[in-house]
Length: 550
Image (cartoon, rainbow, N blue to C red; front, side, top):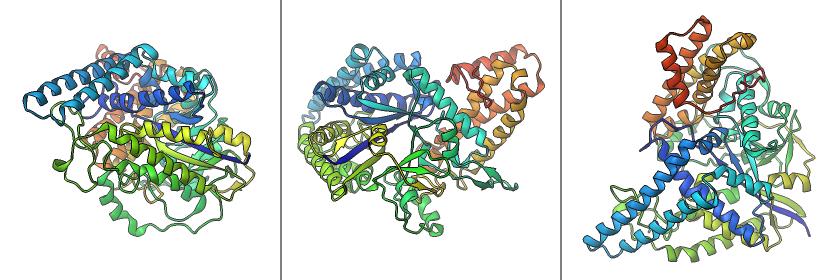
């Protein structure tokens, strides 16, 4: 049998939202992802395991998400959130009954049962521990769990290699803490890669200075493999993965695309793994053929008329009772959702996807199709996505192309060719403009200022107050999150993101001042520090730039 594989890679990330708001921005993001994506995926993987099928999927978790899923506050809040959703379904049923809406009333039964199952599984089957359930799947050999950067820092734009290295080390430490083993695979946030060269700040008038490539830092820290977007390997125009989901990006892209020039086509085949130059760390390239089937609401499966409409919600509870109907239909013209109708469509789309994978590898003696997606696409953005994945994996397991973890692909098809990768990301245009533009440059100025403060502390870390130092680096990590400039650019939660970036900068700056002064804090300052520690309580153990853990 030929060595042909399909490697599904799901990247799970939610910025730190504990104690930072609930609705419309904040904790509800985490609760929605847990209910609509993480729990249904656990059910899919466990069902397959019960049928004797190993999904052999790759699931990455950012350390900041690991911390939130393990926080007791999340477990309590998620329980309350699910009970609230059940109550909303009951109230809506009464309302639809009183108003004679016979078309929508049966859907309240569907949602009540759906959320009750999530609640029962969370409390019973998984004992309130979603991350522990994924660990169990990995320990039993059904999936491979990857780690990522501490708070999803955008590597190419960080000004110092030590900031990248600290994000990586914290990611490895947190993974080891929660999964009881060393991480092999690493998800680079936004697949954003930068080779080594004399780097110059994009917003500050400073002299260039030599920087290591991202792959070199990953290799020095013991990472076994990473992922890049297809255009970094093949050349040509980057497809981008976010444009369909965030309308605000279309306006921004119109502004930038005139100056964007795709690189020349290169000969590399994306269906093999490669070794990055100069580190020789293995990497995979995203397959944009299979990717476009899922990422695109306009061209892909998620836009089918039978599937649940994401954007239309019933006021005031926020339940979704309508189907897409047509991609260009006004929200007022959406027709009632019919869960029974979706099964046939999912079967058809799963079969088509498998045929796409088979056609992609047709004629090859060996190879692997590596499909990269945000985990939240499945269930949250595309409600039927987890069940569709169940059907895809089941069909693949019975065919010539087998589901396989990225690590398994490396073991069976070791890379031989060394490639010098260019700079880029999986954002539209393939570069950094989504994260760095006229509307977000102020965030990077703040990040660079805190990076300078951290660099000044590094030679004397052992002499500084441990409690203040730990909180300073927590705030630095949070400030470096790629989410804040992304949310500003997409206009999806602009005010929230701007406030969060400014808040973490001010807190880090305050803590840096206390560290510089080296004095005993006043009672008021002690109280303020306690507030910082309560609201930004991620990473009980922080890995310092020198590798010390405090």
